[in-house]
Image (cartoon, rainbow, N blue to C red; front, side, top):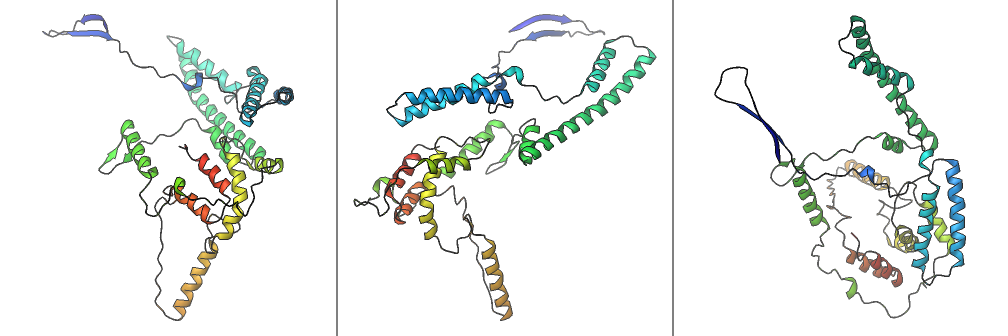
Length: 351
């Protein structure tokens, strides 16, 4: 849409004329994510809010216990709804004070600077004052931000002993990937970067053709009952795993259930591992393997014998491992078949 078309005269003699117009472009406006406030806050910093939340939650759970639900999933959904609703009702935006970075002294100087900038014409004393304010406000702003940074780091070190959370709170933006290298050249366009990343992960997670890998549906289960009887999870196991969950994380609805299964089958899997496998195992360290290699090298040097050592680094070892190979290995380790079926069901539609 073109509007306000006009001809502009030139300050010198010429056969040409300048034409000025306003061009209105219809572009898609991307809404800011900060305007979406339907998600509940992750924490209640005020003590009165926490007290109100616990009272509301206690009432909701007591009412929920009276109702007899037919399925566990229905009870679980209503429990989640009770927790979310109680947190939303307890949250009071009026009590949330923003973290003030710039102090009152600096704010007064900034206001005075803006007032002097609007005054025209300025006297000699005003110009000198404005020049001094430019230097003074810059100095005070730098000191205020430095003090704010120190306070945030000190707060998290005192409460959580975590520098990571302090840096996360101080972070003002996320760094984007500016370029990626494909098979031919370096790409800087955002859309092309997404295409390269998509193609990489599609190839990485696509199931490779490996011989002698049996699919889960083709595994022949033993009709005889397993030597280890399936025992339902009790509340002690659940509470023990809940205490191990990390704070400020969103592990997903299946994380707790998977950790319960992992704890039961861990003993059988660990007993089947060779002693040389030291990496990623509790109570083992790769320093033992390094020490063994160092002794071996010293002995060969002592007896002046040739020594050849080969190191194998599997490309994307964890990502390229197929689920079918895991199911077959667990079956060969005599893991309870009920656990294998549950794990298969958890990963059927995983992304």
